Amino acid sequence: MPDQYDVVVVGSVNADLVVGVDRRPAPGETVLGSDLATHPGGKGANQAVAAARLGGRVGIVGRIGDDGHGALLRGALAGAGVDLAHLAVTPGPTGVALITVGPDGDNSIIVSPGANARLTPDDVAAARDMIAAAAVVTFQLEVPMPAIEAAARAAASAGARVVLNLSPTAPVPAEVLALCDPLVVNEHEAAWLLGGPGEPERMARALLRSGPRSAVITLGADGVVVADAEATATIPSPKVEAVDTTGAGDAFTAALCLRLARGDALPDAARYATRVGAAAVRKPGAQTSYPTPGDLPD
Ligand code: ATP
Image (cartoon, rainbow, N blue to C red; front, side, top):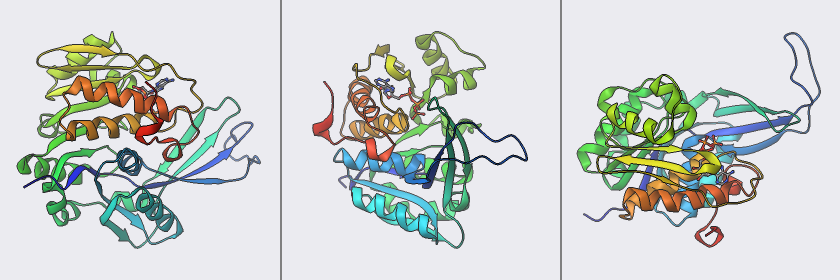
């Protein structure tokens, strides 16, 4: 059976509520901030939108609430062309990220998972046809681990390639880690997994010894390290003027998944994904910054 989807994302869908502040309030204090901006976000939705904007056939398995944020997020995913057949609606609030941006552009974020916390193995079972029709199934850690475990098992038994973006950091069962091809992390997440920082290529090989079939460490402007049983390589990022790095990691992972789905070897997929990550930092926001193939730097 030909793959009907390049990438199926099992993941979070959040509204990002952003307010600029001169300084953060101390406990018991109130400060005035800028006008509220509401943007579609959540690592799962970001990756689905990024892969669809690059021309991928993409589905999402997730949960939104029955509130206005849910409607906004559904609209953003639909607008990018993501298949929403398994985006379920839960009574109650959609996930939100409460983001304050300080004067230096520094973010402080509280995530309220809302409907994302109610994604279950039953939701994954209901989506098994979609998962079985995917070349690549990808997850992040903003939805409950039982749903991720179920999805990893369903993907592997259907012959789909499993990609885990271990973000935010949380313990992952060895059985899930062993299916990852690759495990994708940034430098901080790699250091968390390994118990401390180190030289990136050494860290990638150490990650490989911890169980996944291949490992990718993103290094911001410095590019990415990829490691599998055959080789370890550092791939530089294109030089661009960075305006806002929000969501760059999600754009990178989405592009990596799409190229793997289309048959690229891991280093080739990573090289393409650095171009997509670099394009995403040239514009403000997460989903608003995601490129089409025509927008990519060389
Ligand atoms: P975020 O949390 O901001 O979404 P992240 O920490 O998960 O990102 P990074 O390693 O910062 O991930 O970035 C992911 C990829 O995006 C990098 O591997 C690179 O390809 C691209 N990228 C990020 N920042 C820059 C930059 N300043 N210039 C060029 N490319 C960048």
